[in-house]
Image (cartoon, rainbow, N blue to C red; front, side):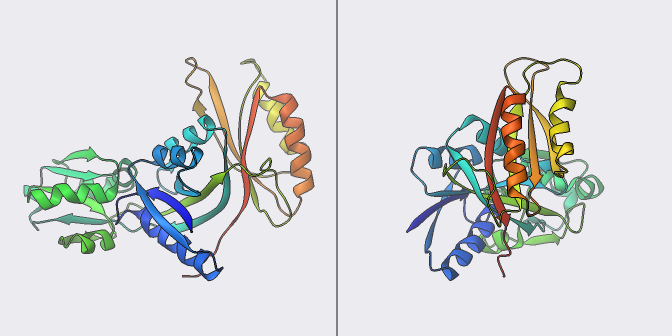
Length: 284
């Protein structure tokens, strides 16, 4: 039985995504058991130490952007590779024990969910304190204890906790969605093979000098490799020192991407290949 870790508890969007992935794996004849953990970093660390076979983690939201703890953890843990990716729509609900929004003093949810509902919060609860917690489902525990607080969570989570739903579809963007990665312990170099559609990497530069990043990006341009995402994150070594996270589109040319990765190894200080993978259609 494959052990798949995810950000729990039951009722989180990660749990819903993990359920979908487990059902897809079951159809392939590969049974999966789901194991909730309390943090995203904890999921990846448990995978790295062998406590899990797979970890499912959110990597990017269409409104709030990348999930930084996922990127930082993949950079820090050297033994992990992305195996699959898929996208799920995210529909938020406001949950509270009162319909009188003026009585709500605090709103609890995961920071990403709070960020994805800023317009609704400003329009309906400008007076309420926004309180980040480790998951959307955790916020519901506060709602259960007081009629003066609310939470942003999924409809399913509210139903599981038997709590009233005050409003639905409160996310700022109607087609709000999150990309999830399924990560395993390292298998090979993670370079693309036939059938892979994307490769995710990160690198640091040899020197912080004019044109250093341009020279690296030119390697992609010369080979006509499209970058579907590029962003910088602090290296945590010194102020102004950055890492660069990049997603490459393979476009049926894995050998060209491999050639580019070989050139990148020479042109960068540290290059980490997080894995090559396909985007799954889970067929729900």
